[in-house]
Image 1 (cartoon, rainbow, N blue to C red):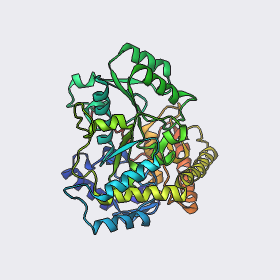
Image 2 (image 1 turned 30 degrees about the horizontal axis):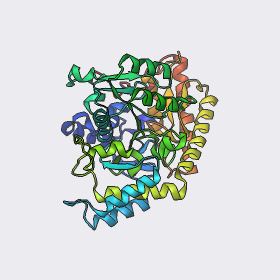
Image 3 (image 1 turned 90 degrees about the vertical axis):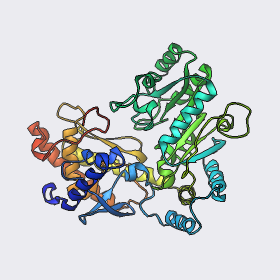
Image 4 (image 1 turned 30 degrees about the vertical axis):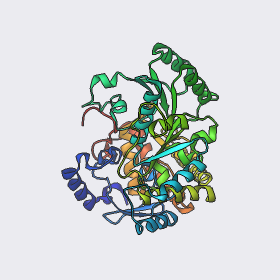
Length: 441
């Protein structure tokens, strides 16, 4: 099937209904139809394992499932069974359930570098709670975020730094400063320039590149020397780098860390974890000012916590992290070979840790191109591959990877034609896909 034959009439109708009722046509901007080629944004009916079906009846091998949250595959039996058991027992009560104790104990056993944990429903709440805690502990106003990492929170302290800063007061934006990843000297200069003002350094400990040797340990030393809190955002690295996240792999312990995404395999659960001395400021066993840390009606729904415990058990007992790396290694090798064989190895580029692969689409001048990304995504979709990234789930099988590589090879053949013409327009069939963060629609 070619991209023109795919069509997706029911998905197109469903997208129109979504836009009429939901701002942006999706509840997460990264899932918007503007992220996909024009008229080729499938609306999902259901999923199982590494596959999803759209409302038009097409089946896809899916990557980056649930924005990296579904790392065990859809409807994983161990997770869904744990959820079902709790649903029959009630999901929310006027007092904590015993499941909250069990889930906290399981989490802290999995992430032994943390001493206390508090659960929430999304990563933004967890990272904002970490920032509030750091400000309360230090008495300082400024937050230093890593400028090279794309997303930390929907809240003002971060969104004010993006092109989508409409509605956020300038005074708020001025309290957030940025430091570059991997550059200790620049970070030290920032801390010196704002001496005594920076409450915390917040960053993803690793993303598409490995941290330079000694970098995380150097940040730890800088934070200690300048009296600020070191926060690791482990939303992505949690479980995909190791069961205990990047801190478990690299051996550098932050003061606070946040987890989500893979923690619930698609169910809504996130966590703020860290040193007891800091975390207890949001509790009842200290004599200082109280910190309104995390207090959410649905933060400890029993079925979501049961899902998290099942996920952690599955990762530890079945060696899921190692499987994700093995799958990613095989996929990356296949995609690179396919791209090279079609003469586009310098233009379709796979990057990142094997468990968290992304791809870049470069134009004839070697520059990142949304137009070439559009071409590439159209060809993948026509071949039954839904891949805004190449982030794997453990449900993928050999046949899925082989099929993906075959489809990538076909897409790269079209990519070569566009490069030779120095114009991908004939193969785009509409407007280019767009970046999530942009000032204008």
